[in-house]
View 1: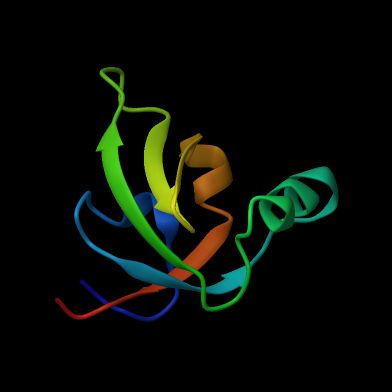
View 2: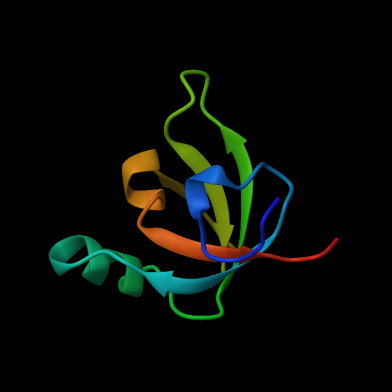
Length: 81
């Protein structure tokens, strides 16, 4: 997978990634910041729901579910295993 600025919702479960940029504005951006999703935060997708949306992510020690629409606004760089 290309490891430069891919949306979070394209990262497969089990792959760790690092936040490089948020492209959200307004209340969605504020919520991301409140959840600790800032530059260089390590995020790991854990599993998809049966319908495929939302996806559970491990963020700063907490499991947080994000919809694909919101996760697509978080650009990340995948980390080497």
